[in-house]
Amino acid sequence: MAVKKATIQQQVATALAEANPGDRPLVTIQAVAGPSVWLMSALGLIGQAFLTYYFVTVTEQAVALHKASRMSNRPQEIVFAISPAEAVGTISEIKRNAIWSSFHMQLPGQAKPTRMNVHRIWRNEMDQLLGLLTGQGQPAA
Image (tube, rainbow, N blue to C red; front, top):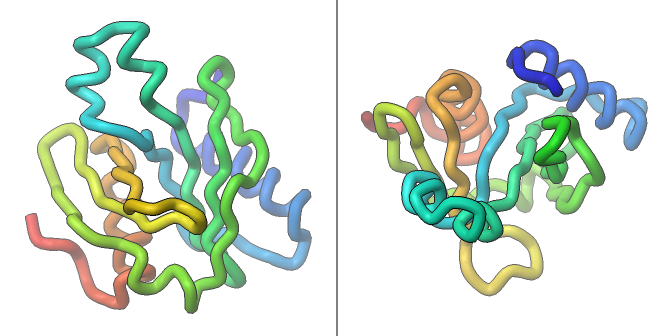
């Protein structure tokens, strides 16, 4: 099970290279899609069923979302790939908190934006990713 951020980023880069050898990742984060992580954790196993784990990566050619394995924390299949032009404007409701920050991302084929929860160990990468996707600097604290 990958725990170190550098190991996780390398595994995602390898998975992306297998899918598209000519592409290079710029920034990767791990995000938990669904309602508040705090609330779902309080509900135990039932709450965990409402969460989906993703790796969100901005590459030179696309924004890719890999599903993350809950057991091994490794990237699985790419579930969404969006061109950078399409990805601009998909981000809303950015909230920075002490431990779990969040933003909403409009995914293809979804009626409503999906809430993405990001742990503080990924905050610097989240700021980079959001800066690339919104065309702005760092989100307000």
